[in-house]
Structure formats: structure tokens, C-alpha cells
Image 1: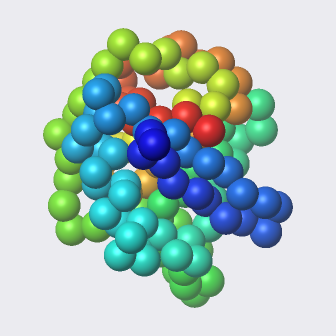
Image 2: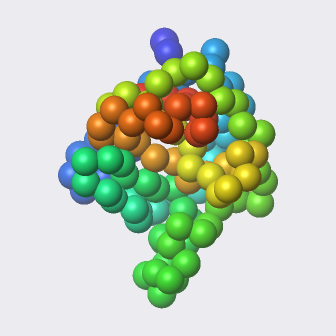
Length: 127
């Protein structure tokens, strides 16, 4: 069976099928965080209709930290694993700061083909 994860929301479930050959460290990181409960009760804090949804920030567990949504993450950072997979609709990719090697826990799902993101963010799965 291919590695995968289920994201449960109040709107239903999404299944992420991972690309272990393209981004093994990012897949491993996501699975480790998920199994530890890191993502439990987090929100999709950034939603841009016609482009993408972003989640994975632990700050979103606390409604008193709304001004810090989008700034949280684990204590570690991942080295980029840019690959040739294009950001087509449904691709799951790691969010990051300006430093290409700054991804930690935040991820985004593109809802529209977004090739301008290719080789700038690590694609590690698809829904």
C-alpha cells in the first residue's frame, strides 16, 4: 500500500497520497508530526480561493494567537527537496519562509494548476 494520510475536517476527509521517491524527508516529517498529534486541531489558516489552502501551523490551535497564525512550526527545519513534479490541482507542497530550507510543518494544497511554484516549494504528495 502506498504511504498516505487522511486529513479530517468539518467538511469531510481528504486523503494525501505521498511521493516517497520525490521527497522522502518531507513525507517522513509529515507522517511523524501527524502520528505525534502535532496537526491535531490545527486549522487551514490561509485560504485563497482559486489558488490554495494552507495549514499545519500549531498556533492555530489557540484562538488567542490569531495574530500569529502562519508563523508557527516545529523546532526543526527541512532541507528543500525540490523536484520535477508540477504544482497541478491537488498537489500538496510544503510552505516555507524566504529561505528554501525553512519548511517545518506548514503545507499547502493547490486548488488550481500553479506552475509558477514549481521547483520553489517541495511537492511531497497529492489529494
